[in-house]
Length: 476
Image 1: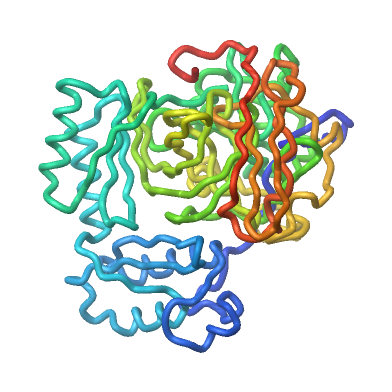
Image 2: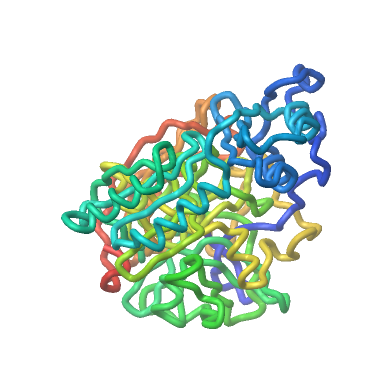
């Protein structure tokens, strides 16, 4: 992120105006499906954002029969799970869902049963170094244990999973250890900690602010753009959350004249315009920006995830296979078509061996702090330039330079270029010159939005060593 201020001082480029997420009716407009398939029954190709809208509608309409959903980014199709024992009387709704383009799949476990299983895990197996999330593709709870879970702790996790019954949950080991990635878009500094800014927002009183990770907000009250620099923002201590139900914090700009742009800084003058706050769907292709490792991409692999960090348990997160490293915490998770999805929380592994990374959903963070994305909030007249498919390379530049590297990064990021499939334009993350804090350069982000479908190949770059000390237990 970068930003410009009325005082000509540099400010962050962050997330942009919230747009309404779609039709209120269950049947989506035909324009949302491929024109050749719009009048045919059965699965249709849908944009990821339209699939998210349809999932929200179906979850409410199907009630107890709803058993989760996921997005097949390769075929651009939405698969909706239904509990075969609870769909009596739902034929009309299912027919509408199929007409709207969804593929209906009968499964054994309902969403409420999966949630109940997750609650049992929380009660009986809250062991540091474990995490779990619901995976609609397998219709099971995926439990992950990091390398610290051994002996009696491992036995506890394994026995609890077995107690849920066959077909309800699976457990796997993960290399590395789960930890918050304390150190996003642009780097921000507080005391000895470095984090990343996520998305610029408009506070309830109309003043500007930005979202970052809660584990950053609870350790330092004031944050600056440069290590040892003058504070530019102050954490709203009343809403900062970590651990607990989420990992998010609102930082209010000290200067109310700050003009916070609706973009994410990809480095080297490239930006992505954010046009909405969106919900994650399993299978959704996503991009992460962090000040340590730059740009990385991957897919959402689980929802409503619980992570047992050394500092405490955090619930309600998004699980992904996107890599991240310390300093990327708080950084932006977004889609190719410009939806703000999440804020980097933590995970295991790194951008060399891979791993799991968890994100705070942007929508729940906005609701908790009473803010909206964009200068005018929901329904604001200004829409991120270019909309879906016209983000990177839009040419919007913040005063101070969109490509200027702020040295730190909240949490995990990785110097990576993301290639958008079908576009042939490769974004190569270069190690480049180190920033002021010694963090690696984000490199050339290339084109993310507007480059065709995600599912892009990546070219991973090694990030330069960090020159910033991090808080104990809150990064590495």
